[in-house]
Length: 218
Image (tube, rainbow, N blue to C red; front, side):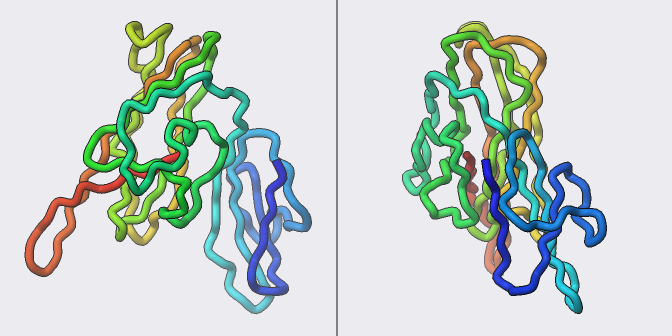
């Protein structure tokens, strides 16, 4: 995969790292041409220009996808506004953008998400990563937790991991974030993904109201 970076201001120098370290102005690589990515990396980028303060950092995780499931059953019905490509959204390798209405996000409201992922041949997975959309002013929140179940078939599954997802403060909220669930060392033929949608309580000048937030994911 080739990754291109750009900035609208001329004369800006883009400093980046791929190992999660700070993209400072002295040791970080200078972007000159598209970056080839062949493994899991965390990209961190800052824009720097003489006489200007450094920009805010932009970061993004990239995961190499070598395993494609044979079938996905989406057991929860997505919201009519956020259908994306339904089951294919879990493995189409197409990232959702910053615009929640771009048609690439799979969204749920008011009910838990449940999806089963099947493999014809038992496989060993090290982790499962989900791309989550966050936009609090649009009532789009991360899940309260993510459960990953696995086994030989749907009748013989056990809980492999449960990850509680924190609610980031509004002033530090990332519009997109990757949530990773590490998995134990065993082979499975089916994975079941379950999430609990996080309710959000908002208070206006007249009353306190409970909003059933959206969960948008890829």
